[in-house]
Image 1 (cartoon, rainbow, N blue to C red):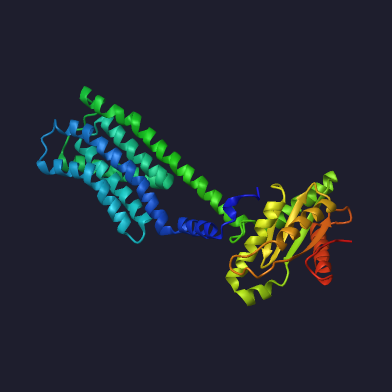
Image 2 (image 1 turned 120 degrees about the vertical axis):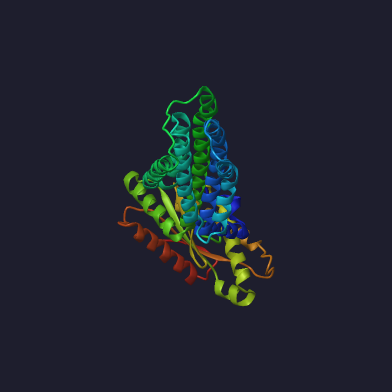
Length: 367
């Protein structure tokens, strides 16, 4: 819809573009990725402390192992986050952190004697993080690291494999098996929403003019081609207009480019206020605009432009109150004589030059 107040403010357009460019910055994207992993790691490792400690308390382990467990569960998530933030490449640093997670998880699996339920919960948590972050390749690498580390730990410590969990381990582990996938799904949902919004902004950037918010030339011509095909198939009425700001170079030379930009935005505003929401306004660059008026005769298009001409006689620019804006308009209704949409566009262009040669500040219709 063209009558959108968000596009009238050039400052908001610049902020939108800056925001989108920032979203594309690799360092910023890496930080956002590390932030998502941080939440999952904090909750997952903190929760796993209890079933792991419930198994290890039955073993005769030194205090160093317990300090390592506390550090892994409650300190490592924050340390990993700081390492990622301070790294010149946060994304790759976080991928390395995930591999560290898999290696340390293998240590605890080995120390627990591959106790079935806590091991399943730990493998589920590490596997989901790996799969969600790097796909099957990272997942398989993480599984291999975990298995090898667990086997090495069993070999070094000489512990016996005990698969059967005790009732306490059931109660400590089952909440993790239920709640952690829900947390992961919630984080994934938030990521999907952000990606959809980012895609919307990218589409906006690819179809809109950065200064005015109307369609850019490339996308407007796509709309024109579609409109031409619809008219040819259904023989419906449509009219296109080419609009040029009269003596725009003298406005820039006399008042400066800031006033020139203000003039372009003012013309856009008048077109949006006068035309219908379903009319497609495009900026061809510089001081030239184009409009597709679907289902509109040339007479109705001329009447609409007459209202724009009248509005402009009363318009005063903030940066140059003495300046007066005028436009020349070329109008071309669709007809079966056009074999290609560019011929239709050429007819409007010829009408525009006819308006300029006739003294400017007027509307002319293609013959």
